[in-house]
View: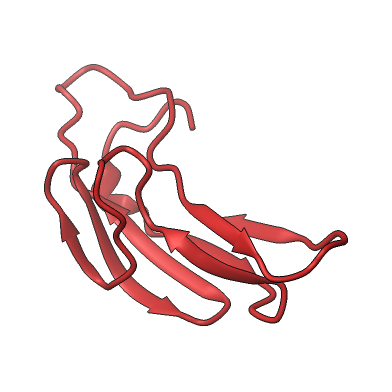
Length: 92
């Protein structure tokens, strides 16, 4: 991501084929494995929807006035159920 001045304007959605993937960890920035909706305070991320094939989250980070954010907002780990290729869609 780049040029974000206000995270409150965004909700991020990740869609995937749940016959191919399971969510292994919603936030790789922490040591714990998170798989449920809710706030991950250490990462500043809130998961608003977690269901087979879809994850939605918001970012709870302040961007200083006059500045913009560029970088990684979260890292989600998916575990493959079978071999082959499949698409993962990210929308914000």
